[in-house]
Image (cartoon, rainbow, N blue to C red; front, side, top):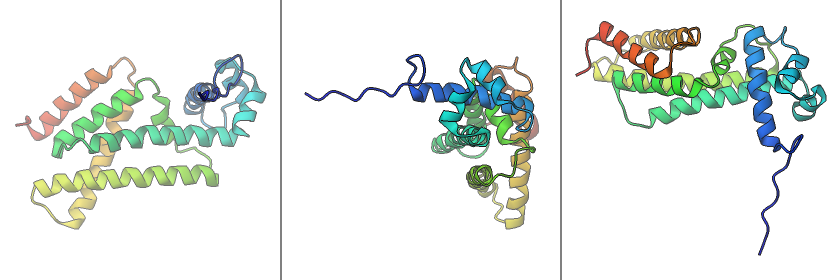
Length: 206
């Protein structure tokens, strides 16, 4: 009989993976609140209840910590949109399902959205690589969903599609950002609000 390998532990008996996740949650929130330049590793360590050397041991540097936070945030958002895209909804129903999923997945970690959309992030090559991959995934999802909507409408004009992608991306960003700015609004309440807003603009869903 073989024995399963023990989980590698961090400090005070906490598994390393769990400790890293805890650090990333705290660091992501601090980076989102203060911006990278003003965020201090000491504050992150204090909020997480650990030592600064442990953060450097896990992530190497403040830049490495930021990159890890961005990787986690990008996967969280893009993977959720990929999941909802695979559900098979089309048109405005797909848009609403996508928003439902994003509200739900961001509720415990709203910092992820703010961090991914922070215009003050440093131009570090590792940071740029993460953001480029994330933005390419998001652009592909937008092109697929909006392209489907335009085909349903009978519009195959490439320039119309390009313009509508820009419109939908702006609307999506605005709705999620508005929700993040109103933490009293539950995911369920925001989903219902989006449905009402879409009905006001496009008419009730049939």
